[in-house]
Length: 94
Image 1 (tube, one colour):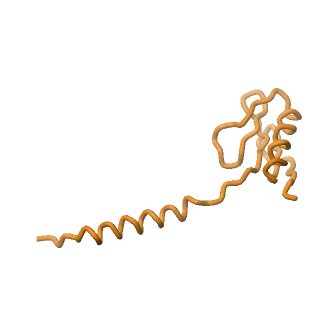
Image 2 (cartoon, helix red, strand yellow):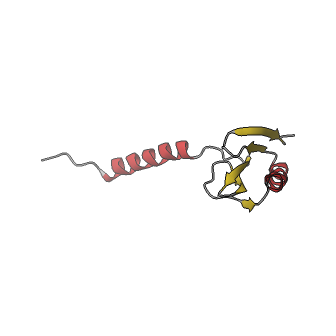
Image 3 (cartoon, helix red, strand yellow):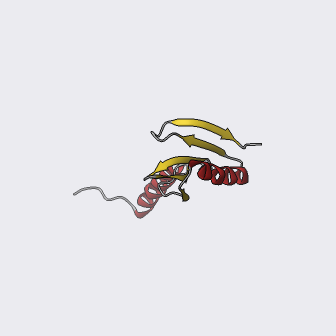
C-alpha cells in the first residue's frame, strides 16, 4: 500500500510551491512608455503590456502623450520606427 502524506506535509508543500512561484512573478513593473507602429497609425504602450494605452494618427502626437506619462512616473520613452526598431530613448528618471 502506498505511503500517504500527512495533511501537514501536503500543506507545507503547497505553501512552498506558492511562495516559489510568487518570487518569479513579482518582477517590478516599469512605467516605460513605448511609441510603436499600430495598424496604420501610432500607439503608446506601457512596457510589458499587450494592450495599448492610446492610439494616434501621427507619431509626434504619440510621442507627446508618451512623454507626459513618462514624466509623471519618472520613466523612459522608447520611440520605435515604422519597422519596429528603436529610434530613440528619452529618460525622465530625475
